[in-house]
Length: 487
Image (tube, rainbow, N blue to C red; front, side, top):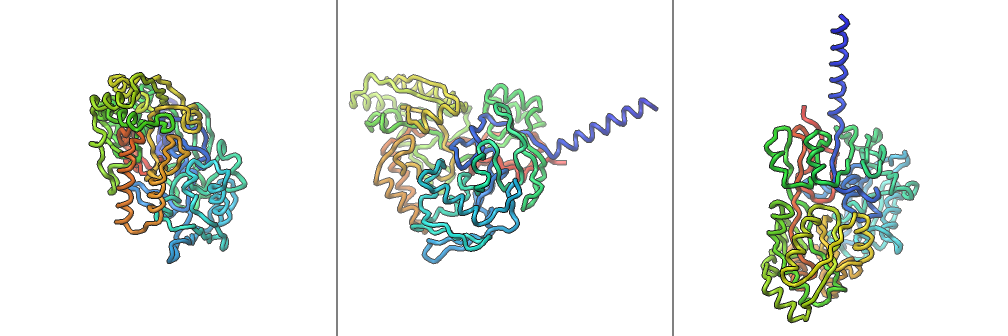
């Protein structure tokens, strides 16, 4: 009797453990976010934790890249395209219990566009002339000029709605309106999310989630194989994907991202276009894709995603041609050139950087490689512009407009390009927008602003029973709102 009872209790405990596991998930990430405030940081890892999970905007990205209502359930646009009237959802509260209303929308947008704004995508809000509160659930945003991208801009992670009561501590104790709220952040290890019982919308199947930070690709492989991680959407060791593919315990999530991976060039240091052109022709893209990404990736010749219908294939303009590269360097008198190459932690950058350095050395350019942690890269390269070359993937959606910002870290300052982006914002006809986007892509390729390498593939692996993870990455996010476990 005693033995049977003990077995029964053990079985009940095991069953309870199994049931609990079906409403929680552990997600692997290679990079830890430097903070948890998407309105005050440029790192993609921030949005990978908080987008749609903790924070929400007026609109939001869906898995297929389309834009859907978010905290705004609907909106109307004036005939002149200048005034957007947003109808907010009623009964929405922040995680601290305070109401989310039109005043919070005004606060968020005014803060993002303020002169002293630290928003990494401040340019998204530059066209806003005024934000007017009509009533608690209605807000009007007045633009200085029509902007065909405005509704899409409001879906970016940088445009989430925050509250004045909690914004001062958002970096470490974020308070949003999403279906999950912060449980705890054990820095250097993990972020734990728990359900928000007062969420205004449909409740996710998951009750909790843990984002576990594993920077080493070998450790990521071991953690997946051991079952310590349930899913690794941005899996950092593509060379081992074949092992997961052959194992019925797992599923592969292979798709596309918005990540243009570039050999970014400081245009105020590498000022001679002949040198930049030589760098472009010294690069063998396929060798980088094969060596750093094990074949996962699509070559690009400008800063635009190949899956976008307005993409222009300009790879031939900077085709691998080491003889041309050598001739251009000789013509420019740059026969004894050494450039710094500062690399952030992702494996595409570290592995790709070694290959790029060898390719540049073959045409006569030496590089001094510095492997930086993410915070160092943000401080030295992105903010301080203290670099010659770096490799990074720009994962923001449709972000060709960053080249119209002379202060941006690669410091490309061309009035003609800036005028194109003004025209793009004013254009509402699809054909006209396509024409402008084609001209913009060609101008970047003609000026050899950066070395354009490849479009980053979405290489993920997950437990075979998990459903609802995004296979593609239309924005930088691990949206858990539709994730569940199969029975």
